[in-house]
Image (cartoon, rainbow, N blue to C red; front, side):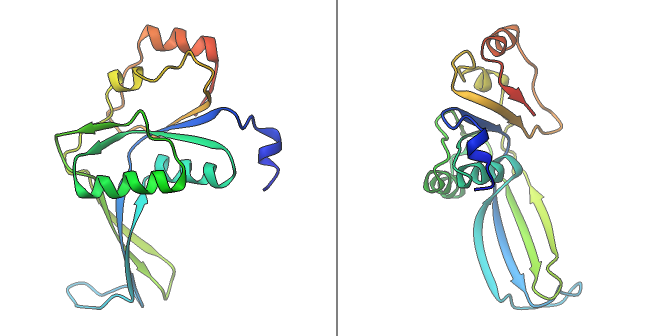
Length: 173
């Protein structure tokens, strides 16, 4: 598909580091006016977040993907984990936090215009720590590429991570 497989090393993974959201989508005929009631024509849950979605696209293209992030210990996180597994995205290095709840995005999608409005909430789920990232063995030859969707807080690199990267030399984005 698109010749990507022919040019990429399919034996190595692309690691996506970021946040996964539960998207709660309300589809409406037209965008509602403020302070009015309207029935939706459809409603569904899906997994969202840039790193999360990108990992799924790579799987669809026939490559290997791994997602690294923090999950809450709640029903929404079980839904997110289940969807990653169903899509074939590796989540073995993800962290489960007993603090906070799964981030949620409420989406209103208009059938008339195709536009959408999103409202996010983090729900006090902690960010991925450097220590959790450092548990990923970057000295192995597993990762071809590492992509970061880092929040405003981010995390600091250690000397050990920099040394391990030099051995493997994955592309960073």
